[in-house]
Length: 98
Image (spheres, helix red, strand yellow):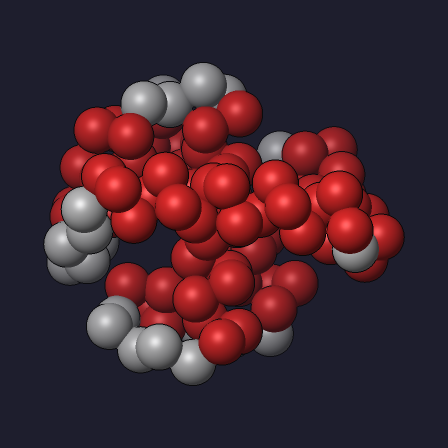
């Protein structure tokens, strides 16, 4: 079940950011890809999925990630939601969709 929720979040986030979902699972450091990846972490944490679950799901897609990086990404999105209305709208739209 968590796998399906994760996949739905990946689909929605990649659509909103206008990137291929495969790009989320590369070591690409482009700002939009990193932000999209962080948003996936944040959305999963709301379900609630543990850092281990999120890391395992990322690994299943070929992306190895440390738990501290996932935690950092979740915190970054929390900050952006508080300061950027567009991020807030995007998160609400995804949560309503999935």
